[in-house]
Image (tube, rainbow, N blue to C red; front, side, top):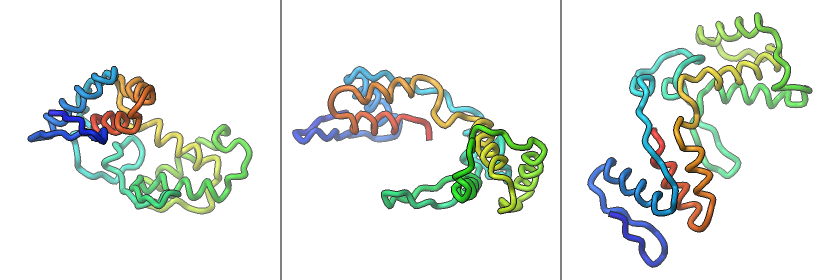
Length: 175
C-alpha cells in the first residue's frame, strides 16, 4: 500500500487501477480530504465518435492540439479552439460575453457547424461568443464532476504537500 519515503514521495505498490484508487483515497483521507467516487453516466460509457458539436460529450468531439503558454500541448475540441481564435481577433468588442447577439444568426451558425462547415470569418463576434457559452452550458456532463470534487480540491490547498494532494485528487476524478 502507501509507503512515504524520506523525500516525501509516495510509492504505491498496487496490482490494478482499483487498488491504486483505494490507496489514493486512503492517503487523501489521512490529510482530511474526503473524496467519493461518483457513478459513471451512460453518456461517458458510450465511447463512439459522433459528428455533433453541441449537446455532445467532450470525448466524442473532434480534437485539435493547442500549445499552452508554458510550452505544454493539450487537446481541446476543435470548435472551442476555432471559436477562441475568432473571438481573440475581435477581443476589443465591448460586452463580448455579456451581449447576446442574434438568436436567429446563432441557430444558422450552429446548423452550419453541425453540418460540418468550418466557422466562417464573417460571423458576428457576439454570436460566436454566445455559441461558445452555449457549447459549455449544454455539455451532457459538467466539466468538473458532480459530488464533492470542488470541496476536495479546496481542501488540498490547506497545509503542506499541496501539489501532491492535488495530483492524488485529480487522479481520482473520472476520465
